[in-house]
Length: 454
Image (cartoon, rainbow, N blue to C red; front, side, top):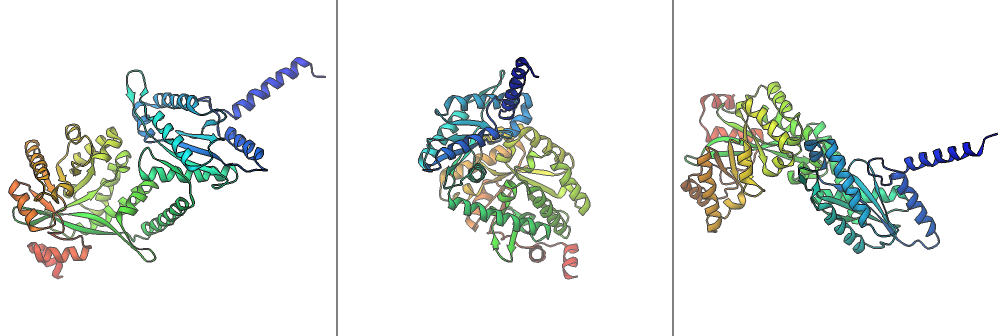
């Protein structure tokens, strides 16, 4: 017969195991099991009169680069500070839990409708945006949030979580630090995005994404010096899909590498038919500048195609560089060591432009069309371009002005000393065959003429 002391010991042990099954070991918050029980409890209590309640999910923006930069111990410390802040600010009767990684969730019994959920989300966003103390340094993070209201967004925990995740994903698509409450319209929008994603994946597999080329010219003589490669997708069912839609989608859904590799291969193969002195300019995404394997992948493609790395220029944006500075620095260094040139795109529209020029080694600056389009109508834009040109001359950087639409803009930029230009005034993006025809008509090269006539 079991003694009472043994029974007590077993009971304590069972309680501890149960507590472990319901607790996140890092932060001490509840976990998914705790959340499911809380949702089940509330929905059972309100079965006869299903009054609404809300669940929410908060996800830290760009936590992985911070974790990679400062180490997992610093990342754990930030997660514990997040848990402490959330525990301190949730209302009575509510529950906060930690799920996977940097994702936290809420059960809010007394939030019944959209406006209150949005107000709560904005409060949480502010709480989580305050600096995090890591001893010898402070770091800042933002958080994106998604909410789902029972029973409109789901009648059980799994349905509600799925709806909250849909709302969270829309927040992420809109940018950092956004708050979204699930609705049927949002669900339809996300459904369309998923359908578009599947069509895009199929198009990449079947090699159906095309590359067009826009000329870049020397403003001193209007001679073509290179081409920028631009993605184009014409789907049999969807029609023309803008790269402004499908490129960000590929970034968000995690297959930008596959898209970019296919496009670079196609572009490099087409550029083999151009005169050897012409360069190929190609855009890299922010996601690629966070992937240490990017430089190896690019050089491998060039090697397989037989394209000289010295003829390739990669365009990156200030925002992309800032996403993961250390990794981006290593990627840029590796590519430049192989002969690839690096252009800073959309210069003047991002943050810390001068800091990026100091910290990174670039070969070329591309002045954003926002300034170029107003060069003859706005003195401020003219003076900004003058300042950029003077600075680049001192730093020995080449300059390309983007978005040149007419002759007057081209003349003005040439007068100011800008070396290169790009825009509809010189040529619209065209496919590979049309580009060869353009070169035949506008660029004299005996070998080129022989290839085209053949």
